[in-house]
Amino acid sequence: MHEVLQRLDNVAKRVGRPRPRLLAVSKTQPAAAIAELAALGQRAFGENYVQEAAGKQALLAQPGLEWHLIGHLQSNKAREAATLFDWVQTVDRGKLVTALARYRPAGSPPLNVLIQVNIDDEASKHGCQPEDVPALAAAIAAEPRLVLRGLMAIPAPLPDPERRRDAFHRMKTLFDTLAAQHPQADTLSMGMSDDYELAIAEGATMVRVGTALFGARPRKPETT
Ligand SMILES: *Cc1c(COP(=O)(O)O)cnc(C)c1O
Image 1 (cartoon, rainbow, N blue to C red):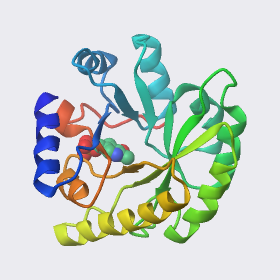
Image 2: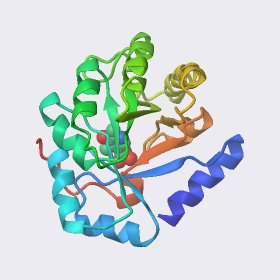
Image 3: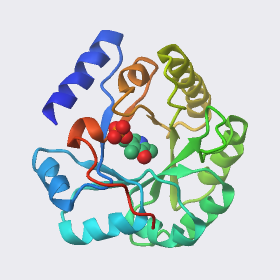
C-alpha cells in the first residue's frame, strides 16, 4: 500500500496537483485483506455489491473505516445501502436520491453522495448524462440527509491514452462547474489501477484502486 501511496505522491508532484485520496477497492477480496490494509492506516474502502459489503462489515466490526459503494445501486437495495455505507458514489437518477434520503438512519451523519456520470455515453454503463448533473445536484442539495460531495466516472477503457485523458478532462470541467454552484462538492472520483496517472493529471481528487493494491482479483464478483 505504501508503494501505491508513494506513486500517487510522485505523480501528483510531477503534475503539480495535491495527492488524491486513495479508495482501496476491495470487491472480491476477503475481509482479512481489508483488515491488513486497515492496520497499515488505510481508511476508505470501496465495494461494488451491497450484500458483499454487509458480509465483510459484519466480519470486521472495525471502527473508523469509511465504506464507499462504487457499484450500480438498484432502488430496492437503497435502504440497505443507506444504512451500511458512508458514501454512495453511483447516484445517477432522482429516484435513488429520494430513496437514499428517506432511508438514511436518523442517528447517522448525512450520507455522502457522488453523482455518477456516463462520460463516454456508453450503452453498457450506468451514470447520468452530463447535462443531467445540475438537476440531480439540486435534488441532492435539497435533501438534509444527503451531502453532495461531487462526481464519479468510469471512462471507456479506450486503448488510446489521449482519448482517455479527454474523458477525464471533460469530467474536470463538469466538476468545476458543479463546485462553483455547490461549495461542499470537493470530490472528483476517477482513475483506477490502469489509468490513475492520467486521472490525477486531469484533476482527480480520489482514485479508486483495486488490482494495484491487492493484486489480481481472486474470482468474479457474485451478483447480488
Ligand atoms: C473494480 C473497480 C475499480 C478498481 O479497478 P482496478 O482496475 O482493480 O483498480 C474502480 N472503480 C470501480 C467502479 C470498480 O468497479
